[in-house]
Length: 152
Image 1 (cartoon, rainbow, N blue to C red):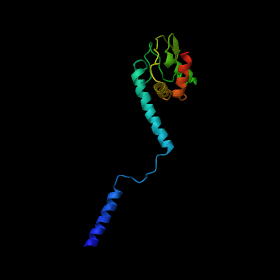
Image 2: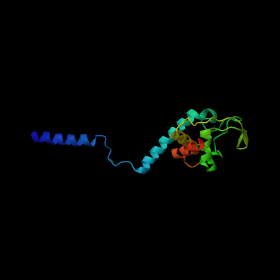
Image 3: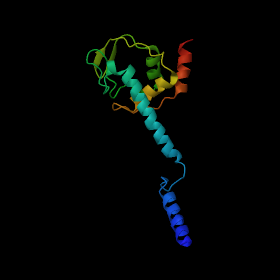
Image 4: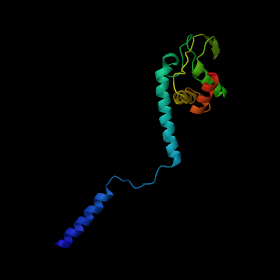
């Protein structure tokens, strides 16, 4: 009888450990998986900041408000390849008439220099990969460098 309980306890332990929630692969995530997860998180943070600070004028879908606020959809400023121009606009605002997709706009955009370098980079990168845009990535260091240059 003692032998039966020993075998029973052994089988019970094997079952418990096999059902402990460890689904096999205890290997750490690959760097590519971690980068993808970080990119998704950053994109969501950028979207949240965009919705908080930019959406009122440029709309949820980046279409802008006709005759008032320019669209960010397929934006020539965003897609120009000169990330410095886009950073400068967010840091310093924009005043005076501009033309986007053949339409004129003349509303003042306020400076967003109260946001951190990281927050501005997140917004810029969100816009750069959204609304039919495909612009180069901006780092917080890029923003910091321009902030330091334009404040002198």
